[in-house]
Length: 113
Length: 115
Image 1 (tube, rainbow over the protein chains, first blue to last red):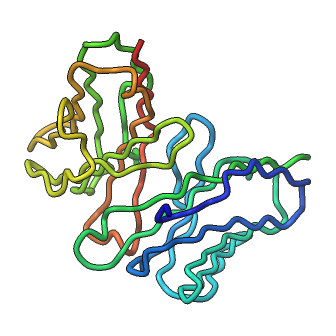
Image 2: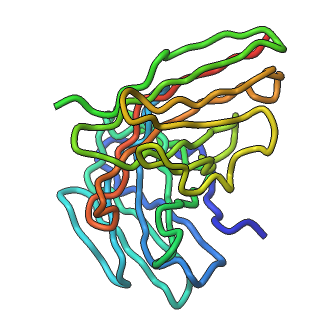
Image 3: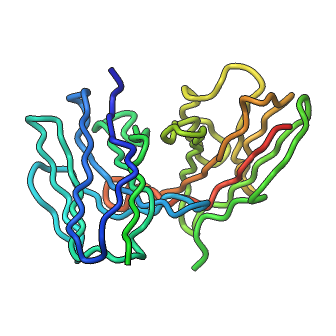
């Protein structure tokens, strides 16, 4: 079993739709959770960062963490064509080694005008 | 306010040649991390460096790969005697001490193709 599982998609939605992206993980030591957006041929860009269970909102983006289920989600409201990219979840443990991020494979999202 | 700068953006090497990938961290960042993204795979940690020190190289292949972050100049990831399996995107990231507050900032990567 991989440490982090993420459905690679591709996921195609119409403009304005609500998008739900998810990751599951097996390592209970993971305490810090991130979502990155990666446009084609570009580097990952940090979108959201959270370390507690519950929801964190930033504009059209909401990150949700459920540590008891080892499940994290990213919701995108009112999706736009410019949101078309690959979304990567990443996580790390606390303490020594917390700099070492474990990534999912990424979900490729296309938002159709 | 330049971000993390990586060069070259694209690098083509024949099997057996050496590849040198450079990374200049963001201003004020003293921590550098290298990750590799193989086709259809997620990013994998390779090495963590601070100025003149390798902190953790547990993700580096044991042979042919080395990294440095000298007192002056960019961080260098060196791959000797490249093989086709080394073809990948190599990303450098940097952070200040407060990783937990700000996370990583990644560069645009170097795409290495071994022919």
